Amino acid sequence: MNVTTGAGTAVAPSAPTVEIDWSEAFCSEGANCFRFGLDDAGRAYIGSTLAPGVYVSDSVEALRALISAVKAGEADHLL
Image (cartoon, rainbow, N blue to C red; front, side, top):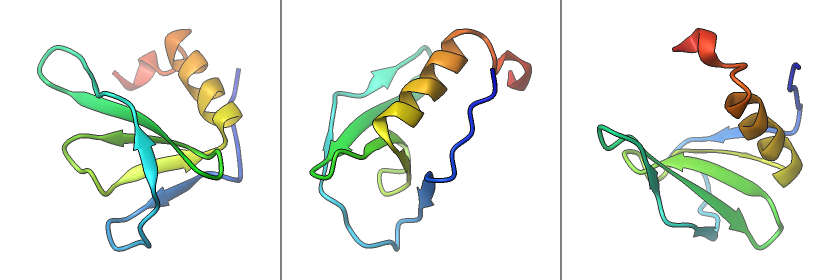
C-alpha cells in the first residue's frame, strides 16, 4: 500500500504559532519520544519531544493511514 497526500506540510520553528493540543508523549526504548496533537481546525500533528517547534501536519485520515502503514511494516526497509 502506498500512502500519498498532497495536503501534508512540514513546519519549521519560525512558522506562525498554531495552538496544538498535544497528547502525552509516546516514548520507546532509548527515550525516542513522539507526540500526537490536534488543532482547533481538526488537523493532526506528529512531533518529536526533542524539537518541540518542528512537526508534520496533515488531515487526521492521512496521518491515520501513515500510522497504519508503519504498523503493517511498510516502513521496515527504513530501519
